Length: 291
Image 1 (cartoon, one colour):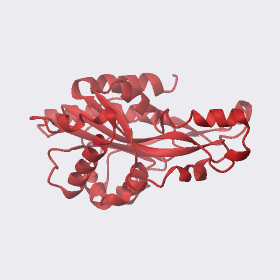
Image 2 (cartoon, helix red, strand yellow):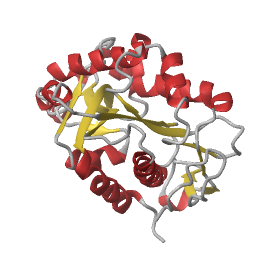
Image 3 (cartoon, helix red, strand yellow):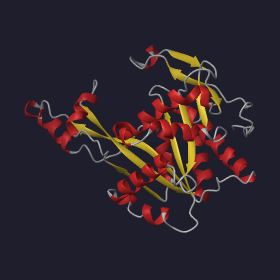
Image 4 (cartoon, one colour):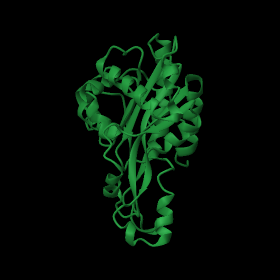
């Protein structure tokens, strides 16, 4: 279990090491495992701006152009003891991952938050699973914590449980200090994907492949395994097409060495505040490395 972090931005408790794959190719016997010691830090405005902005760009995918990412990064960095960065080579380096939460209501007049809120409502209207999100966001006395989290592609999912556990502790400490983090709901913005059949060789494809292709595109897969856990604890959840979506044809460019392409999409997960800690515990049970 991750110990509760000291809210002093200069002092943090140690976080457990994790492992990363050195080589994903070949059989199980051929895989080289590289031991990497990940370190958890509070946000440092003079260090983390560019790395955080890059991870936000990755998180929001093709729709990142709709937002002032510099302003969003600055807002996250303005609350250094809420959330974490994960690094490998010390505090002075760029983050490999981050997690933070913003109070949508408190920062409602901030332009980038206002833009995000309008975007959230627009996308919720396009997704059956999120259709009642506007009612929740507009309800009296609602305080929604917007969770933003991303990591570099090869960073293992095992870093996620400590990040979420520390967030629970940090929010608890902030509420004790009378800071505006007593959330009634948490809204996670993330991303997922669907598998799309290639359009390049369909005429020459065997019938079995055509039948398989006809069944693709309906199931949602998560880039972040923890999102699958969070979705099971959600009040509302759903996926949506990006505003700057480039069409199914772009999935072919993301096929790599597989038969099917990948169609990225946005995902939102809304969890009631009282159920969030249980969801975080479930993430730990699902993803924490064996002891």
